[in-house]
Amino acid sequence: MKLSKEIHKYNKYPERVLQFGEGNFLRAFSDWMIDLMNKKAGFGSSVVVVQPLEQGLVDMLNDQDGLYTLYLNGIKDGEAVREKMVVEAISRGINPYRDYEQYKEIASNPELRFVISNTTEAGIVFDEKDRFEDKPQKSFPGKVTALLYERYKEFDGAKEKGLIFIPCELIDKNGENLKKAILQYAALWKLEDAFIRWIEESNTFCNSLVDRIVPGFPKDSIEEITKELGYEDKLVVEGEQFHLWVIEGPDFVAEEFPADKTGLNVLFVKDLAPYRTRKVRILNGAHTSMVPVALLYGLETVREAVEDKLVGKFVRETIFDEIVPTLDLPKEELDYFANAVLDRFKNPFIKHFLTSIALNSHSKFETRVLPSLLMYKDRKGELSKKIVFSLASLIKLYENKANLELKDDQEILEMYERLWAAHDGTEDSIGKIVETVLAQEKIWKMNLNAVAGLKEQVCVYLKKIEQVGMVEAIKEVN
Image (cartoon, rainbow, N blue to C red; front, side):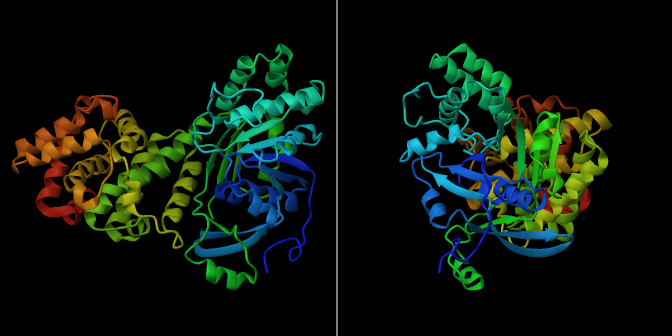
């Protein structure tokens, strides 16, 4: 017996939300939220899903009447929790490559109001090869432009028929970039000036930041899950308990999209930048700074790292003592987010290997960790010892890159191979390694040897790791 409306009765509402993307993330994130908004805030909206690529899941979704089971696993109120629910928000799915006319008809729906998307970081792009007469266009913004033009014509450019866009792609200023691409297509296709004005004046493009880990379909445990559920569901999706959606836009968006009225962690703000910085510095920065330390310590997963007595203390103090003080949001907001991050790291349902985070460690360190180091130095007048220790550990980690199968830019790997091959164990040799690494402006976007005291402190920590090993070395910075 499969999951369908035959075994799960539910309400269908007017299709007020158009969603580009039928994958795991949106189904475990925005569709789940809309389902709760319908049940708790009277949102009264169904989601019609458009498959952005020719191959996808909408046939499977339609076969289950838009229904699927969501498991939310993680730490909640200090306890490990596993919750499940059937999400009822989706009314149907459309494959525009096969059913273009059905896709085109969406533009004529007078009740349509919102557009949500997750077409990956590469989805919001302008492709000059897209043509107006294509059915459909290849790119996501191309498809949207054609659909908007149909809507503009259908309602004679009525201002109230404009749409609110809330893209979820993980790129900075995703809403602004989507609008830019749409206007590029309007110009490329020589669409009339009145349509361009309608895009500008009647449609709202919000920037947004999303945060939830979604492991996806539980292929390793689906047999047990099917027995537990008592029905077959080919679209089971797993996500963590934590969720955050920050939406930057005018006040009326919050009034029309009442996600914050349902107890959901949804913030409507005027400026997204501090929240993006918070996520990158605390969540991603903690990941990146812990990796070399924990791997050299002999651990395998994020959970092991934060639960270990020594490494866990190192991670906590890195976050609260060296990263949080460099950020500009209210302290209670920063502390809440930091504690939530630590709970997420402890999630017993997710096995997050440190080696997977170690991919391209240098570019990650430059964007996620180095700004905290520099800001700490600027504000405190001294170096952040744990972040500097992490940098020393990163240099040491790449001595053993072959054993750990580390992946990074080939030039970086070759540099370390040369440096460590020439290392003779002397302080001068350590100094040469550190000075060479810190001088890589291609990596750091600056010569880090210019940061007062940094080279000397990295050398001290690297020498200590070499002499006594990571276990003893970490005790000295804790």
